[in-house]
Image (cartoon, rainbow, N blue to C red; front, side, top):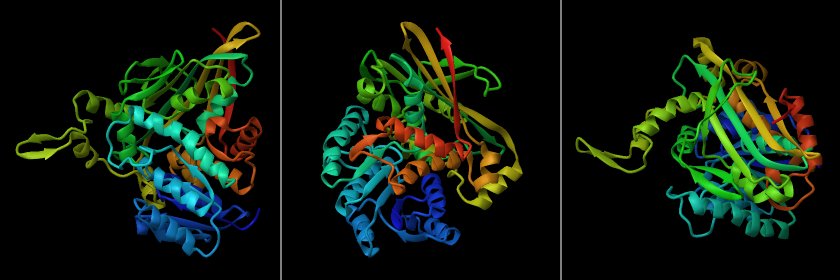
Length: 423
């Protein structure tokens, strides 16, 4: 079990947090951090004794494989903390190196022959998830390894929370995953993770699972209102492009008590920033010519959004300038039946905010929750706690694995509580 070697691809909020966690893990010998941004991996190399930093261009699968082979010892696990477009190369590298694989999300255009450029994501993206859960699952089974997709906070921790929310139901009808991002600094920071990913999620159609079918809904549409104890007032939540409803649709009968409807609803600082942009067409990828200059509105907006903070001195300066809000909520509502009666299991996740996350780990709240959540999935790998092989999403873990995960999460003050209601 000891002397594990991990290759982390990507050194942003997710990858750096996993590196920090694994640096203290006794079962890990070496952490290979690789990114196109050499300065970022060199920063991690300076901070953590087990980290070795390398520059890699993940657009080349051969470059990833060559890096893995150059280490001189067998890689046990690849952790993919890169944008979605690199997933196919990272997966294929894991197969070539015959190692386990962990992805914070899933991938765009995962099927062979598709290109990196963004375009339609509807049927192709869903088909890509199905393709991974079938064809890639067989490939990983054949080498007796496990690949898990969706291993951050959302998806990831949210999927495990959803499994707990439905656990004691006899049947489940509807699931809501509801997230409110409530960290607001005096400095202009609309997104606390990669702006290209965050803004793309805001621009793209959302997925929902309705009446047993996967459907698409307009971005930031179909608002609902909720008032939870974690919130100062009633807040509005909107449809949001996220993996969870698709994962749930593909696992509804076996893992979610026959669920027929599932939605991901999002609110908070990022929505407040993005919704007016969407309404006036500034999230369009279609190029426009204005005063002789041609540019896609999305690209113009993205060029003016600052990168998400990830360095300790940068985060400290933001805190020193002032934090106006430091809250949020993450709630799962599972509607179903128990002993013939209608029941709502309302599961609330609690985690440190920005100030507390920085005190604990010199991280933002986003880095802490997503990175620590992802790091726990990594910890289960290095402790050899997973019992499956193949490729699965996080909603497909066993309850034994889920319970162990939450036992670890409690030590990081990431906890949950369930309120049972009738409806």
